[in-house]
Length: 209
Image (cartoon, rainbow, N blue to C red; front, side, top):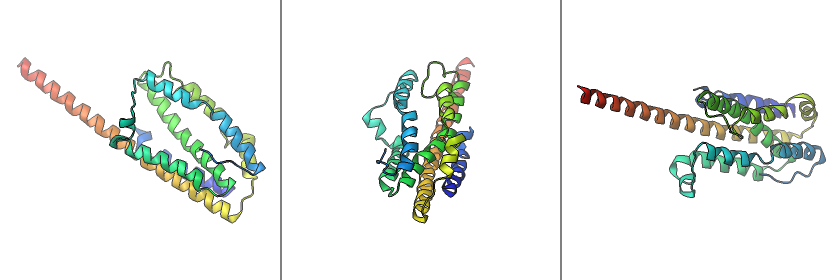
């Protein structure tokens, strides 16, 4: 399992290096994996409610048409890819590696996004994108303390090891594509605002003359 954990760390570092951050479930049958997966699921239960609440507070209005539109194609495809990994997995080891990889990349995402909302002054009242949620996530990090040691002691077969690492690599590759797409969209939006702001300023100057 140490090789799998090393792969998760390596892939997560690639995810952390994307420009964006600089500017499910199958039943687990094995007893040795079930305890870890169940604990992870319990710790994250209900967080989707926080997300929906924050969307309302931030004025984000979604509809079926917008969610399935061109703008969110990469986000949508990435979500489908992540879900497919759960059903593609043939071993409990891989089913455990999937949430571990998501937890590791989630650390990168939460650190960047919570910091962003704080800097732009819209963090008050948020739940999902709050510092308190980030602290909770940090508090049950499965890569530290007794949890980490328990993971390292899990023995995997060659097939389990190879399948788990492949799943981790595909998951992070999908998240990298998503992060790069988000970066491009944000960059284009910033350029449009700058351009329109410049046009308005020029227009105002002309009228003043």
